[in-house]
Image (cartoon, rainbow, N blue to C red; front, side, top):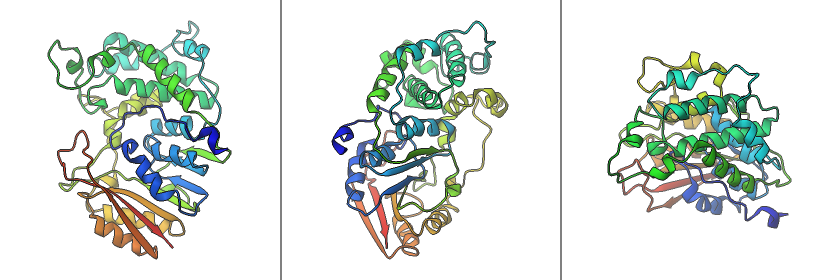
Length: 349
């Protein structure tokens, strides 16, 4: 069966901290391990989970962000469902029998998208919510969210900066043609890539939307790619970076969760232990202890808090053997540290 899907490729995704560039290195390190079931406990784009699926494993994807959960359904849980032209037509057509809310147009003017785009986003988001097929609904959210990300400077929703798109100035970054591509055209392109990526590996594949500490144990292998704190204690606030997309995927409850005092209309902040340097070591110990019967694989970086040696020490408390692999030469778009290296820790036994 492997030949049927071994050449499948994920759609292009844009996500802070994505492992797309190094996923082959990660999979190369784990594919010879003895496991049949795998949990990607903080799945993000789903890059690692998707490639574990290509290995023919039982794969569970999990992420605490709702829009990422839908990514997991579309890429991991989905076995054969496709989005066709009639689905897209329905998603982009106004239903005269439905009374649409204008939340995005009303609350996000001149923040992320043009007024015409805001009106269209309102309609599309509500039409997707009305889709009866759960898999197609998740696929449509995937397509819409990736479309909206690609139309954003820095591919983020962390500040009010529509002017960076609309000002008539010389630019040394970004892609003006992509920014101005009509939402439907971009959506259709993403849908084409998503359809081409769909496959059934013959195993159990599923997506969950849980806090990582609430996912039950019992998997042969657990992959952990936690939010990252650099040496200065600055973390990656995924909920803050992508709040708009989580709102899109929970449209009917979105307005009540918006922090209207913030210029960029973020969601009301929630406590995140993964952005607290004092709690990071304990967070890892908690996860390692809960999944002590599993092979544990941790993606990390050399300048992180806690240190690689501390994570190794925590892992050695529950695993008999811990191997550490380094991959140098990568620099991330928003990171000035050119000497940072990716690390993979694998605990077995």
